[in-house]
Length: 429
Ligand code: SF4
Image (cartoon, rainbow, N blue to C red; front, side):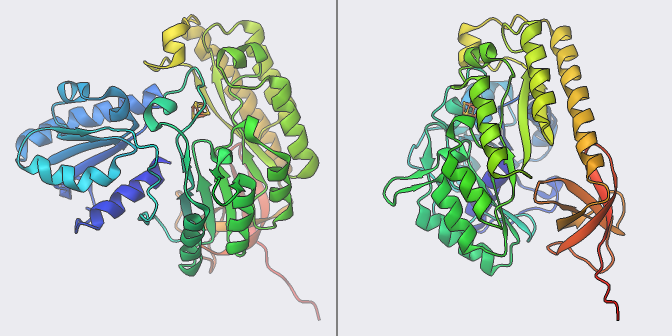
C-alpha cells in the first residue's frame, strides 16, 4: 500500500512540475512515505531523519517532509523529536503536499493531518515502478479494531473507490501493456460500492474480465470477509491467480479473542477448508505474531499446530511489540518476556521454513507458468519471475524479457526460491 501511495504522491508532485531525483543527494525535497505497523519500520525512519539532520544544516533550502502513517500517529511531536522535518502529511492529505512544499519555502513548519473519510485519490493516476506489474488501490482504511494494530488510527474508516473509476484505471493499464494487476486495500475483501451494488467478488470478476490477458491478484483479505462467492469467483476466472494471503495472527481462539480479530480459529480453519475444496491448488500465505499479550505456551503450541496442519506456502512472522495508542497498549499487559517471544518466533520460523522447503521441493520436476519480472539479483544472465501462486522462480534469461509469460521446468529449490529452465516445445517429425 505504501508503494502505491508513493506513486500517488509522485503523481501529485509531477503534476506541479517537480521531477523525481535519480538519487537522494540530488533531491531538493526529500519526502519519506512511512509505515507505523511495526516498531522496526518506525526505527528505520527515525535513523533516516537523524541522518538527514546533518545534511539539512549544510544545505540551506533543503525541504524534508514525512508522509503516511507515522506522522498521522505521532503528530506534531515529530517536529521536536526530529528538527530536520519541515512538514507532515497524513494518508488522507497527500493532495496538500505540493502546497505544503510551497508554503514551507517561506519558513515555518506545517502539519496536514486531517482525516478525510471520502478520500480515495480517485482521478490520480499513480506513477508506477516498472511496466509489468501494477498496484490498484481499491479501498482504504479499516473498520476493524484488532488490538495490536495502529492502522484504524492512522488510515481511518473504510472507503472504496467507485467501481467505474477502478475499471477506467484497469483499462489504462491494459492499454499500456501491464501483465499483472494487484488490487489493494487494508481489508480488500470488504470492498463495497453500494451505489452500483458491487462487493469485492463482483469487482474482482469485473476486473478479471476487463483485463483477460493480465494476471489478477489482491491483498490483504480478512478471514471474516471471505465469502463463498469470492472463492467461486477466484476458481471460475482463469486469470485470477489461485493465491490467497489470509492473515491468521495466532492459532489459538483465546488469543484471537484477546486480539479482537472477530473470528475463532475453528472459523478460520473452516474458511481454509472452503477455499481448498473449491480451489485445490490454491497457494496460501499468512501473517503470524508470536508472544502477544497473555500468550501461554499452549497458545504458542496451537500456532505451531496450525502451521503444521495448513502448510502455508509462506508466512510473514513477527514477535509482538506494543504500538502506542492501540487497544492492546491501553488495556493489555505486554507480559511475555522478550527472550520467550524471540524463542517462540524462532520456533515458528523454523517450522514454516521447513514446510516451505518441503512444498518447494515437491515442485521439482513440475512445469510452472511464470511471469518474468526482472533481472535476477545474482546474475544478469538470469531472470526472476513468479508463479500464479506467487513463488519466486529464477531461470536462464535466454531471449526472454520482463513481462514475458513462459513455462519453466523446475530443477531446484530452496525454502524461498525455485530454480529452473525455460521449457521448449520440440516438434518431432
Ligand atoms: S484488519 Fe486488523 S490488522 Fe488488518 S488493518 Fe484492520 S485493524 Fe489492522
